[in-house]
Image (cartoon, rainbow, N blue to C red; front, side, top):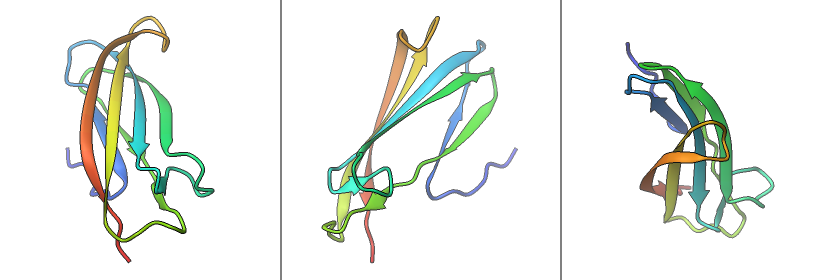
Length: 103
Protein backbone atom coordinates (compact mmCIF):
# COMPACT_ATOMS: atom_id res chain seq x y z
CA UNK A 1 0.00 0.00 0.00
CA UNK A 2 1.44 3.38 -0.99
CA UNK A 3 1.57 5.95 1.78
CA UNK A 4 0.81 9.60 0.97
CA UNK A 5 3.58 12.13 0.36
CA UNK A 6 3.44 14.50 3.33
CA UNK A 7 5.54 17.46 4.47
CA UNK A 8 4.11 17.92 7.95
CA UNK A 9 2.90 14.46 8.77
CA UNK A 10 3.91 11.57 10.95
CA UNK A 11 3.23 8.00 9.92
CA UNK A 12 3.14 5.48 12.79
CA UNK A 13 2.98 1.79 11.89
CA UNK A 14 2.47 -1.03 14.39
CA UNK A 15 4.84 -3.76 13.16
CA UNK A 16 4.30 -6.02 16.18
CA UNK A 17 1.87 -8.90 16.54
CA UNK A 18 -0.04 -7.17 19.36
CA UNK A 19 -2.21 -4.06 19.43
CA UNK A 20 -0.38 -1.07 20.94
CA UNK A 21 -1.73 1.92 22.83
CA UNK A 22 0.32 4.89 21.58
CA UNK A 23 0.88 8.55 22.37
CA UNK A 24 3.14 11.13 20.72
CA UNK A 25 5.17 14.07 22.02
CA UNK A 26 6.75 16.63 19.67
CA UNK A 27 9.25 19.15 21.06
CA UNK A 28 10.52 22.07 18.98
CA UNK A 29 12.96 24.92 19.65
CA UNK A 30 11.69 27.91 21.66
CA UNK A 31 12.02 30.02 18.51
CA UNK A 32 9.22 27.91 16.97
CA UNK A 33 5.74 26.89 18.07
CA UNK A 34 3.31 24.00 17.61
CA UNK A 35 0.32 26.37 17.57
CA UNK A 36 -0.52 29.65 15.85
CA UNK A 37 -0.39 31.85 18.97
CA UNK A 38 3.31 31.04 19.43
CA UNK A 39 3.01 30.05 23.08
CA UNK A 40 3.54 26.26 23.07
CA UNK A 41 6.64 24.48 21.84
CA UNK A 42 5.48 21.01 22.99
CA UNK A 43 2.68 19.04 21.31
CA UNK A 44 1.24 15.92 22.95
CA UNK A 45 -1.45 13.63 21.57
CA UNK A 46 -2.97 10.36 22.71
CA UNK A 47 -3.22 8.46 19.43
CA UNK A 48 -5.02 5.45 20.91
CA UNK A 49 -4.78 1.78 20.00
CA UNK A 50 -3.08 0.79 16.75
CA UNK A 51 -3.88 -2.74 15.65
CA UNK A 52 -1.10 -5.06 14.35
CA UNK A 53 0.00 -4.14 10.83
CA UNK A 54 -2.08 -0.93 10.82
CA UNK A 55 -0.87 2.63 10.25
CA UNK A 56 -1.93 5.99 11.70
CA UNK A 57 -1.24 9.32 10.05
CA UNK A 58 -0.98 12.50 12.14
CA UNK A 59 -0.47 15.99 10.78
CA UNK A 60 1.85 18.13 12.87
CA UNK A 61 1.95 21.88 12.29
CA UNK A 62 5.02 23.90 13.26
CA UNK A 63 4.89 27.70 13.16
CA UNK A 64 7.58 30.36 13.05
CA UNK A 65 7.36 33.24 15.54
CA UNK A 66 7.97 36.89 14.66
CA UNK A 67 11.58 36.71 15.90
CA UNK A 68 12.39 33.40 14.16
CA UNK A 69 15.51 33.55 11.95
CA UNK A 70 15.92 31.70 8.67
CA UNK A 71 18.04 28.67 9.65
CA UNK A 72 17.81 25.09 10.93
CA UNK A 73 16.30 24.34 14.36
CA UNK A 74 16.40 21.15 16.44
CA UNK A 75 13.34 19.04 17.09
CA UNK A 76 12.59 15.85 18.98
CA UNK A 77 9.83 13.33 18.49
CA UNK A 78 9.00 10.77 21.19
CA UNK A 79 6.52 7.94 20.63
CA UNK A 80 5.31 6.10 23.71
CA UNK A 81 3.83 2.60 23.92
CA UNK A 82 1.53 2.30 26.94
CA UNK A 83 0.10 -0.59 28.87
CA UNK A 84 -3.15 -0.61 30.84
CA UNK A 85 -3.83 3.12 30.39
CA UNK A 86 -1.93 6.23 29.31
CA UNK A 87 -0.43 6.68 32.80
CA UNK A 88 1.98 3.77 32.32
CA UNK A 89 4.73 3.72 29.67
CA UNK A 90 5.97 0.36 28.41
CA UNK A 91 8.46 1.60 25.77
CA UNK A 92 9.51 4.87 24.22
CA UNK A 93 11.15 5.68 20.91
CA UNK A 94 13.05 8.96 20.35
CA UNK A 95 14.04 10.65 17.11
CA UNK A 96 16.04 13.87 16.79
CA UNK A 97 15.54 15.89 13.61
CA UNK A 98 16.17 19.31 12.02
CA UNK A 99 13.47 21.83 11.15
CA UNK A 100 14.41 24.06 8.23
CA UNK A 101 12.90 27.55 8.32
CA UNK A 102 12.84 29.15 4.88
CA UNK A 103 11.61 32.46 3.57
